[in-house]
Length: 137
Image 1: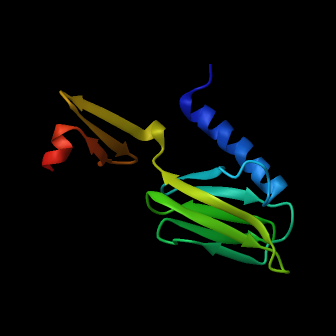
Image 2: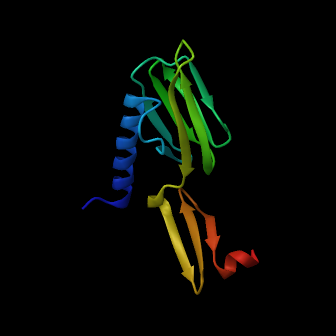
């Protein structure tokens, strides 16, 4: 049986391959490129890119490795968008980016009606809290 992270990785790879092969105007416009915070993801394109635009560079960063390879790095939790243009100004990719924590490196602490999520890579830090304890913080 596949682990949860393997399923997310596989789903992301399948979604990404559809994005890069089909480009804009495809039937499924709800695709989200998932990147983990402080991690990089390589995007291989089917044609050369001329311009890279990231909606919020505080959330994610894109670096051109070569004309057909972009390295997308998660910088902070949140969402933004990525637009890649060819030499004629046509959109090759126009997608939402979700930067989130790596679920494999989290610990959840349940106490009565509250829940705390700790992101543990390399040190455990509080990522989110819900319930009565979160309301008092």
